[in-house]
Image (tube, rainbow, N blue to C red; front, top):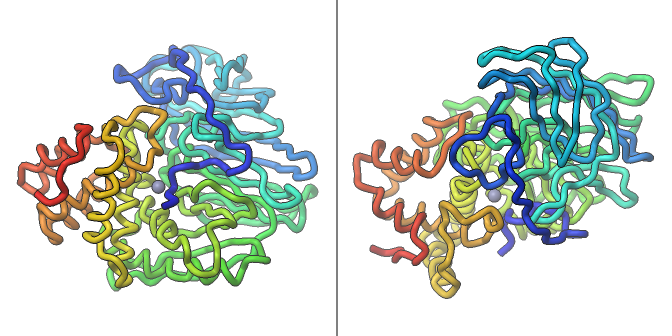
Length: 467
Ligand SMILES: [Zn+2]
């Protein structure tokens, strides 16, 4: 079964060795991270304001990034992530500063040392022809869409964000975002959050989106091209305001896309019941004119490839999967990629809950079938620490979901869904890791769930599903 395990466009995907270079020297937590070259712990981001002009004929991007940040330690320089694009000028708190670019990093020399706790603003002018970043999972980040290539998309998980804007590329560095995107007349632009302004300029149309987030850089998204738009609302219950819904897709596939996405309001309603209040101000799906290895849960605007739309809801489980990520993955974020089962195990279990909800196979039936499949495969993976190359291994998804099902069988439906809701409520708009989940489960339920979870998550041998 296809899952959102491969982020790359199908064309050109290639496996490359992971670089094992030492992390940037500006400040590193003691625990080893899976992608230590990305992100810095020396500062935290508060807000990104990205002014972008995209020229389809040249596939060129002119960017101005205004980044508000806080120093976590005394800073003499600031390290950002920016790949294959050229920073032309940079300022810190209005003062022009010296920059250096090397191996996907952009370093800004502070005009004077910034003390720990200092709030500061960076302004970076940059430009270039953005291209996907090659990764062990194929090309990720910015890519072209359409035939001919006159559109663009972003699918960055896990480390593709620096392909289009300078950022602190950590999954737990979450910030607010404003996007002001100028595209030629006749082209549309979509980004995370909601459209707050659109006006003509000398160079085309400027589209402004704002998303208070908070959002990790890898979930930031921009789509340009020509789309058919479908606006609506999802009434999810008496105690919850309706969720604004905005889908967009190429006009030529409008009929099939509208049909395949039609049950999103019912998914949102069902998941609000299971997981608690929807954590963001809007939701929508964007279908791009390209074949994708998998959909991606870009925050408030999940992206699907044309190959995920067949007019027969053939991949509807993935529509449910990406919505569920908005609770688990986007709102409750990862502290590090090693904990990815907290995203993918939960979203995969949501697929099974959706199947149960619509009267097809129950989660129990699916779990038993998936368990039998896992039993016949190599048991050589620790789900809570699969290694950086295997974060998208299908077994992380399936065994992660089976872990939750084992917990459901132990706690009963009432206790289990209360635990899911409390997990989201406790870490909403923040970041967490597996150790925190184990502690939360015991604390919340008052039961000794740790031995069960430990055997599923940290031991390689597959535990029995039915105790
Ligand atoms: Zn997923």
